[in-house]
Amino acid sequence: MHDITLSRFLIEAQREQQSLSADLRQLLEVVARACTAIAVAVNKGDLAGVLGSAGSGNVQGEVQKKLDVISNDILLAANEWGGHLAAMASEEMEHPHPIPHRYPKGEYLLLFDPLDGSSNIDVNVSIGTIFSVLRCPAGSAADEQAFLQNGRQQVCAGYALYGPTTLLVLTLGQGVHVFTLDRETCTFHLTQKNLRIPEDTQEYAINASNARHWEAPVQRYIAELQAGKDGVRGKDFNMRWVGSMVADVHRILSRGGIFLYPKDTKDAGKAGKLRLMYEANPMAFLVEQAGGAASDGRRDILDIAPETLHQRVAVVLGARHEVERVAAYHLS
Ligand code: P6P
Image 1: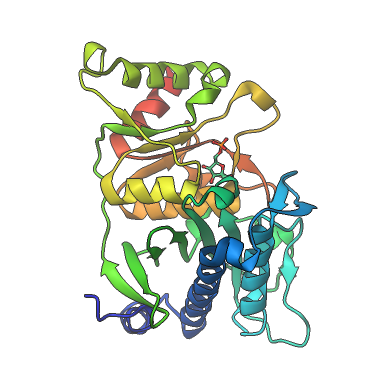
Image 2 (image 1 turned 180 degrees about the vertical axis):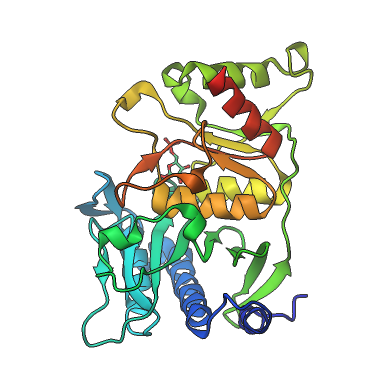
């Protein structure tokens, strides 16, 4: 399997899968190369002076890290000239990035969180790039409205995980596959095919410091996990929280579990912390493709009709039976 590079995998998928066009294959090759460049910058860290704050803020009201800006610039520069995109949208930019007039436009829309987990950048904990691809509606101006499609319209999605190894995890709608970067040749090699999330688990991921702000169904659900075998669940659970969604979701895709970033009352006006279009939707697509489930606690993430580009959403994803239990508690 390891002799199958990302390029070969995509060429063979294009042969077998009608929905994988030459332009989409090129888009994925370009995104993978951009993620390799981001991995190089991340791995250099202080040696390249890329850690710390960029001294600017983003549309989310967050202080941007230098690597947030560098990663965003790498993805924009890599993707704007190829003729495969109609526009791009990023967590780091308020408005969609149009393709410059000097370049041809294509049929796809690329959305990304260029560097997810920014609070972990300066402490050498795994971070990642999350991306999602939609088709641009025919005749559209490729403006914000063109991006506002529900998650089931995604033609592919994935993430790069910058950890002890650099991974590219991808779905084209036919399973979830893992590619590992060979740093010597700068080539991604297929290392795992068709990841599956077990329907049950004994491991959960949540930022427990928010417990007093959770809604009652989530407080009930987590309390039952913490009661372990002495409580109604009759088994003990373990907890993990990396604080980088990409790392937490990768653990769940790799060995199972449930991840929750629920709505909380800290800011009643916010539906959740995570962003629908370029965090929750791509991760939900991957999780469902691996046999898991992804909801906002009440409805499937992928069915949510987006209203704005940067809208936030509560996220409960992973082991199907656990996600269903959380939804049942919200209905009871
Ligand atoms: P908290 C990272 O900033 C992020 O957007 C996700 O990657 C992560 O799951 C979450 O926020 C962590 O949030 O409140 O635990 O720092």
